[in-house]
Length: 350
Ligand code: IN0
Image (cartoon, rainbow, N blue to C red; front, side, top):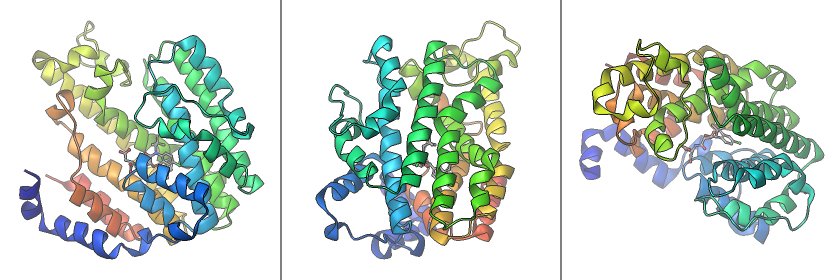
């Protein structure tokens, strides 16, 4: 099956080979792993384990910003792993989330009881936090403040039984788990002086960058999330189908396929409302490595939304973009004109 794809999409196969053999300008690692001290190496290897394709884009950032983003990414993964871990009872999880940001300053703190797939970042949190404490104070404050605010939001959500009813609540949830990441990243870019201070000041645009990614993930992962008892589509969408008794779980049933597809398409439409902000944000980014870091996930999200639109596979399994398609996007997100072209391609796809 996979082999056939390589013949059907020759441009993507070339993109994969190009990425594999030559790397590319934007994703050319500016750091040499072999020359680093052991703990730094361990952090980069955890980054590679937790985000396969994305780690190269982080490592291509200029060194001190790149390392701050690497630590930010690992710390966020640790927080997210605690939130996701259904084996931790709520009376343990809530205090753990509330005090999470303080652990960044407690030498030796780690968490060994998680069985989640990214548990490695919790098991080795003492290594991550020691590296965190060596970052510039400005970077430390952004990372700690983001964790604090995000964990507060996670607690609010868990306390109302993880229910997302209205679109407003959907935006609120996505703000906590992804919009705040965008706001934090923009503050890191401006603090590094690679980007203008205005990038950090326009919080609404940074928030939209996160919302576009997170809404796309939530739309794509519907089947897997329902299986794991997570109901992250806003229930409001069900009321627009005209059937007041329909539940999110019902959308998986074959008989409800037309209603399910109309809900899906409405959410894709809602996700797309963030695109103008995404374009405005990217337009302001000056440094090529920062531009690639920001643009690649957004274009991948656009490709994913296109694949999700009116696609019944959302209700039976996983919708994915091909590896070759990802490689093509990674190789081509070089400037605003290229990003426009890619967005145009995905919006006009028959
Ligand atoms: C991210 C974001 C991310 C990157 C660049 C700019 C951003 C601006 C605002 C918000 C988020 C931004 O990107 C990653 C992408 C990623 O991890 N991709 C995965 C693939 C996948 O399907 O999971 C990979 O393995 O390559 C992202 O999804 N998130 C993220 C987390 C931390 C940081 Cl520092 C940056 C997660 C999320 C929830 C969307 C914010």
